[in-house]
Image (cartoon, rainbow, N blue to C red; front, side):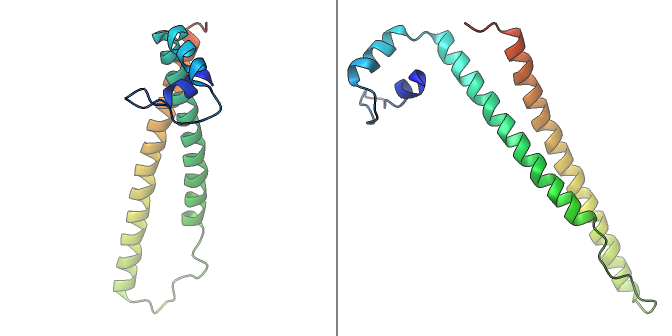
Length: 125
């Protein structure tokens, strides 16, 4: 929380008003170390990646369920060849989109695993 307050200063040292006094910010500036900033940003990145992963999985699951549901009506025996071709094209497009979204999910999961492993390897101070 202290690091967040300290980071609210702008480039000229002006402070964007919150509940922390200027004197407290000066104290924080003297006491904060680069390692503290590193730890703060790593934890922040881990939390944000975790949130993005959960949200992406939730939305991907809903999309997969919606797209894999049966259409509800079967093709009639008098369907034209063009309708069959359009259906096949739509199915291929759907499968390609789901494949690419699964690849993105894999990437986000890899990021999440990376931050977890880094946090396990680095001792907290």
